[in-house]
Amino acid sequence: MSKTNEKFEKLSCSPLSDNEFDFTCYDKDDLENLKNAYNKRHKDDPIKTTNPKEIWDFLRYKYHNVCNKESCWLRREFIPSKLGRELVNSFAPSHPPTWISNDRAWLSSSDIQDVMKQYERRYKCFEFIGPSPIDYYEKDSYTGNTEYVWPELVNFNLEDKIKHGKCKIGIIFNLDKHKQGGSHWVAMYLNLRKKYLYYFDSVKTSNNNPIPTEINKLVKCILKQGEKLNLSIHYGYNDKIVHQRKNTECGMYCLFFIITMLKEEQTWEQFLSKRLSDDEVHKCRKEYFNTSL
Image (cartoon, rainbow, N blue to C red; front, side, top):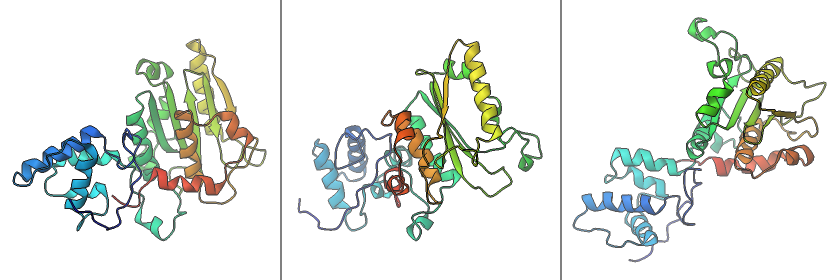
């Protein structure tokens, strides 16, 4: 097979990808499924090899006139819709088109959810709650005051989390109330195996930036429930370092905090002892998101 010289975009893989190969976000089974789907529609020109790299090279060459990235194959005529929906989760989510002209745009609730949902699927012990407005325990005016703004927080039940195997829990809040436009993202992370709960604000907790009453209310609820279950949970918050010094990356700080704590790539002590710059977390946008799929 002759080679094509067209530039082929390397995509960021999702946490659901096994990263089995360095040239693709698909694993061996995914490539075999792509091969089988292709062969069903192209019996006169089937993929014969069983080598994953050769399968990948075949598809790249076959569709080089219309595809400059491997996710594009999922939109070709030979892909059943169910397989396409499954395999698109091999990739990190797409960021909004507005990021192309402004790559420091604030993260929206949807941006945060798109990333966290993939980590929930990858880590069965992990649950993400949010992103919630700070007034989570108030009645939601958008539902005619019939429901709480964020029922999962109002009804937070530690014993139930343990029963369902959820020992690691990440929560993200916006400090604006639900009828406001959004101001600043902050995060909490709970690890029941290691018995700690941390509140992280990228601009540091201080006399001028106190922990919101609503956060303290939830913290007390979690610690009290822990005591009833004979769990002595250590609680801490960032009052040491102002990490964020620009005004665009608070959402990225929250994602980085939860993801690195979940994967145990970063310790709480590191967040308290060494500044993580805005530019450092900004670089993670290319890891957590793709420009397009």
